[in-house]
Image 1 (cartoon, rainbow, N blue to C red):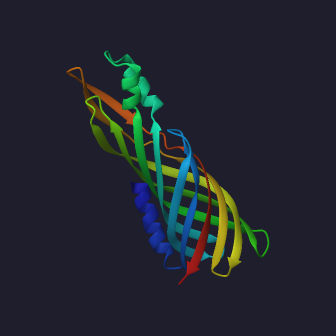
Image 2 (cartoon, rainbow, N blue to C red):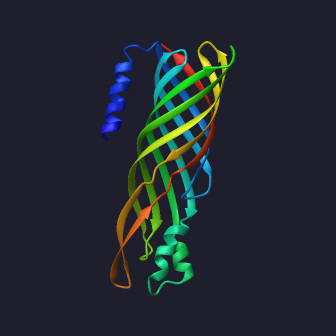
Image 3 (cartoon, rainbow, N blue to C red):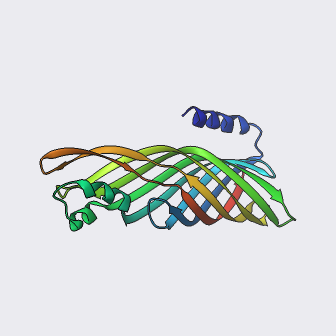
Length: 209
């Protein structure tokens, strides 16, 4: 949390020297370790420090319905459960919300094209919905810090707009513990969601005062 606070303070200080503000929307595919690839959305707002340096806060969104095979393995040693029970218990829906401060450095090739490199640090909240042994639906929130490294290509549409293509690696592993009553016995389980993986997106960025 101290690192995140320091980044937010740094963002506030740099705003004094910023030439303007930026806004962006980016969409594409994200393949975390926990599940199959799915649609990923990012919304960015921040500061255009100079021609080749931006600092922004990005809020992301990712949703997936899947069968949590890693968690299913935890039930294999629990007496009284058959394969159909374990399959039902592992059915999971997750909503992932990463929030981070991103710094983007740009490297011009010519008037229209630029390479860029980006890095970010922040926090992540994950909402999970899944079944319990008593056939109820349970809802949990999990948290963790996150970081991201990436890069890509920018094409300048005009003086105040650009399109971009990016590829990056995102790291986060939100987790929590919970109890489930199985055959009259309370059993404690830990669920960890490996939200680390590769993402690829395209987007549009705007510059304004």
